[in-house]
Image (cartoon, rainbow, N blue to C red):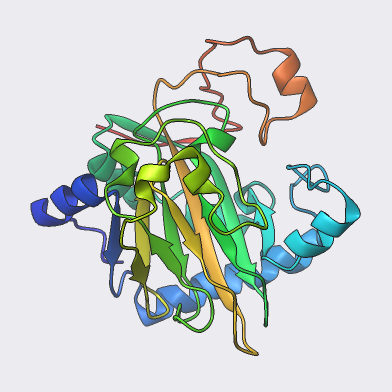
Length: 269
């Protein structure tokens, strides 16, 4: 694993709000991640969460039909698959996230398999952090390409530097590719950057960096394994997100999110 970051890489990520790391995984590691994903996805039988079918509401049936064709999304595979647990709970990932975000400690918020099937719909411009149950401007995610991510099959695009000016207002992933610009019209003239990556490469991006992905215009899959990282010391903001009804019932706004069973500590300086 190419997990050592140079000062130049850290500076670039903190300036632009994202970083691409080519050749992140060795060939054997890439096969290990692919095997873990395949096994974990098959065991889920279509359920998004370990304990329930879904996490976000999708609106009416017409909306559901559209969003079901954006990507297959499976969350917290580390919780119910040992191979994925070994991959996701690697301290080296936490150290990279801490260095890039400037945090003293990092916890997992949730992992996600994001699988664009052949001919899948685009992923509209959006922010990540406003979905989550904590509000920290340093939160970030890793996105590991398990297939080549190309212009044709739906690679990520970023709007550089936007995380410095965005807030926690977010239209979410909608049918309208440009809905984000109703919230942030000043970014409408920004130039986007395509994150074209070979399988085994990865990107990191701040959760407030505007990003999206094109449709999959091919007959192949675009598989990615991602993980959202929460700075240590984060507190509950009242949004349920991935938390269960039971967990939310025992939380009030301002309570620390430090349950190691839900959000394992990956790294601390």
